[in-house]
Length: 458
Image 1 (cartoon, one colour):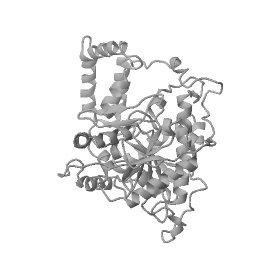
Image 2 (cartoon, one colour):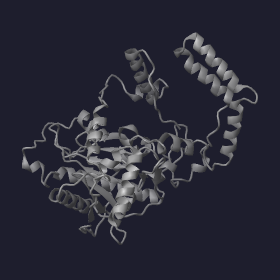
Image 3 (cartoon, one colour):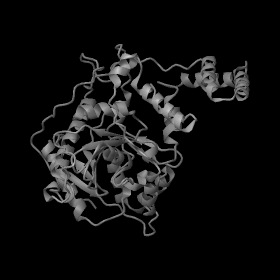
Image 4 (cartoon, rainbow, N blue to C red):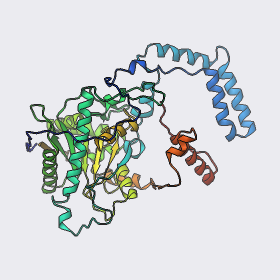
């Protein structure tokens, strides 16, 4: 059942945005106009790939094992060998792909067919720079009633959330009108902007064996989803006439959601399912959908929501970078609560008004969402899910399993101030590569073995 609370505002104003991306094109060009100039991804030469592979493994292998590996590579490269057969097959596959031979393979094998939870394994997180709304560190006293003006949610929290939400909506407006400036590299060559099509209204849907990404561009849907106390709400941020709600009206919707969350009965947190094994989640979603048409409607609302907003209510005396990072990564109470891990953009706002994001990684790299965050700095309904009496649709034991999984992961934040990215760039080195090598060197010194790595590439 949906309880609707309509909030409309006669005025809409646009918030100031952060400084534009310094590598964005300066003249008037539509967002996707330069994509045709982006070079097609080439297929690496097979012999060069084999040579690079041998150089990579040689330092880590005893000489006898390395000689065996060299012989295997030689056989692979032989005329009419398996290597040439596979290379020819790859060229044929590439000829039938519109943009890239790698993209669909990568999305399927690295993400959509991966059955382990997106929680911790796939999703990325970030903290957002504090604003003047954030309560100073150490000053947030739970004993002070004035800190929680709306039940378990604070005034500063909903005000900050409304401002960031408005900034996100600003960016979606610009995407829809293609007025987001296209990006270039340092030499002025255009970068592909396609991932921006998969930011708003984008959701990973659990399916047995292989998940699906649901998205559309341009996206003119009118609502976002709000999660508070593990209860899911629909918040309409664009009225039926197509007019955007201003931040004050959005704040009113957030307050209503928070009050409804506190006053409604406790229930199983449906969002915890998004932190589970993907096949388990797929079966649970099918079970829930079969139980009632209302559940089907709820999932449709969630899937189409432009993005998700989590209003966390767990109190912490000091929201320092370590605390915020852990909660952004792991969820409320460090156990996947108060989240929907399938959304491409999931804003998290803490009681002290500090904020962060946790984003499903499949369709978009973090630097794309990072630009949205940088430029960003009710008709409302609570979604009531019906559960089977057996509890199989959303088992309470999933909460305990998620907590156990989270406890197996350590996260420590190093605040390094000796030098930064500017010095690394002055030495003609990629800061990202520099940090990756530092991590690998530290790991090898500690464990005397190389560590598995994962790194975005373009």
